[in-house]
Length: 382
Image 1: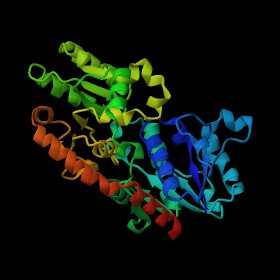
Image 2: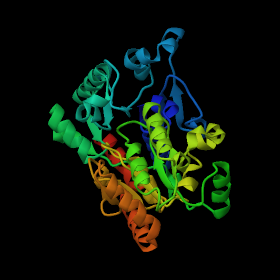
Image 3: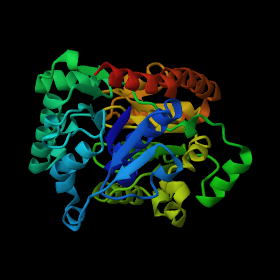
Image 4: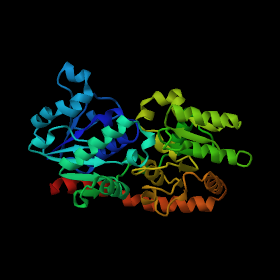
């Protein structure tokens, strides 16, 4: 079986859709190495080491015109090359399928991650909302199968776009298998020195946007500034919201309690951009704090549970689906409750151990083997 994928995100996105793509492809190859995997991507980067897989190939824009206009190639020009690649299935990994692919003699699958732009339209420009809506509606209409990454996303597709429930399969994603590994003390110490990590810290992993709600953690830290001096290590970057949280913490006199790893020179190394160092960073934290206002899934929660890390997260959208009873929950606006959870984790070792144990058990429900089998089952059903 030769399966084609939209490979742009795997090579170009450091978080979110990029992590989803890289994890899916590596996990499928781990359990089904006999298959052929063909990635269609505007360019190759070191974010995804495709050359280490003998059964992977990359197809790129065929001429100067499409190389200069990669978005046009992905939308229109790619179809001719998909046809020439003799695929059995083409899987759009990020909410879309190319135009006219329905005219080819191949089956198609699309993964829909979320409809956040519909639930929180003010966080998107009008043209962005229109583009996302058009792509997702069209992809769901022409695809032979639709994968939703959570029940939240499935319900949104049914409620907002009228997609047939029979066409949608919920496939909870797994995460990069590197998070299942227990990191040695030597390696953890090396990573600690490389990123100047403090002895104790809370961890935030996400892009820094209004929806990701980093400011809620900062407000909770301000509430606790005289009683809890544990800093926050941040993996992720942003612009407007990043400057806002820096200013807020500066006004409160505790800006030194934020450590942005993306600002360090070590963040330019492959071991950071590929997330190879992340398990060691996770496993030295007190807890992952994930205050997002809305998620299609919430992958860092799963990464934390595999890492044996307590989770504090929002009680909305898909996050309770992922963590179930293995997290401390709070409303995204309730910074007092969040502050109480931070204090509890820092002071109650028994509570932390209970959450770690529950998290590891919960993570097993999202095993890489189950995930791979779910995806292949969909492919074989077409």
